[in-house]
Image (cartoon, rainbow, N blue to C red; front, side, top):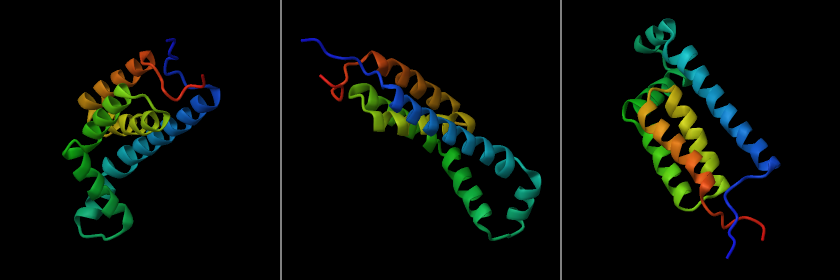
Length: 127
């Protein structure tokens, strides 16, 4: 029985590039213009109640507890077991968020699992 390996086509790769770059861009924006800006931090700590301060507090809570790294690792492991384009895209987004937002260890392991998933048989391939 000849099984096709998990290899997305050109349109699917374009979709994955869009997802990856959007997640990476959002993570870079959030890290350097919201979390690490001292003026934003001082204003939020002084009691400013805007959506920016609420999202800053939420994202800080998430990356302090390693949510991005654990989510990336869990989704990448699921994708490694049974490759799927949707799981790959979501795991890729969490990897980008985790690597930029201080969850480097778990997110890099997840990225390695995503690369290894290209060697797995794909049930979604056209036969």
